[in-house]
Image: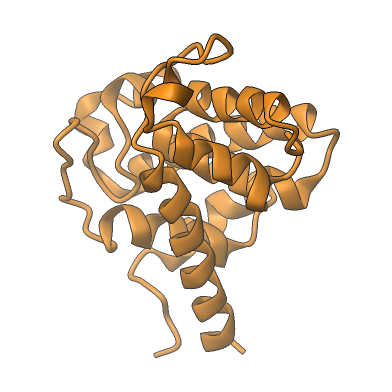
Length: 181
C-alpha cells in the first residue's frame, strides 16, 4: 500500500522535527529493530529505535513509556537530533558529512567516533570526512595498536559494527528512496 511501516506517520512527525528525510529515520528504525516495537537488545536497549532507558530518561521518557512506539521514536529521534546538532557544529555545518558521523555515534557512542576522528588526524586522514577517513579509523579501533593509542580516550570498539551500520542504513535509505519514487 505504499507504506514503509505501520509507523510512517509517527516517523514523519519526528523526522520533520529533526529536519531529516523521513525515509532516513525509517532506515534507522528498520536497521535497529526491523520495525518490531518489542525488540530488546542484549544491552537493554528497547523498542523500535533500540533506546537505552538512561537515554530515554534524558528526553522525559520513562521505562514504561519507552515500550510505546511513539514515545520510543520520540526518544530515539531526540537523541539522533542532539547527535546531529553536535556533528553539525563539529564539522562546520556540513550536513552531508554530519549524517554518517551521527549514525555511527548512535550505534557505537559519541566517544568512539571522537576517538576515530583523533586517530584520523594523527594518521593524516581528514577528520572532517567519514568515507575512507574517519570510517577507516573506526574500523581500526578494534586493534590494540589503535585503541591503546594515546589519542584514544574511550578504548576498544568493535569498529566493524558502526562502520557497517552506516553502510547498511545508507543502503536501506537508497532502497526506500527508490521504492517511494
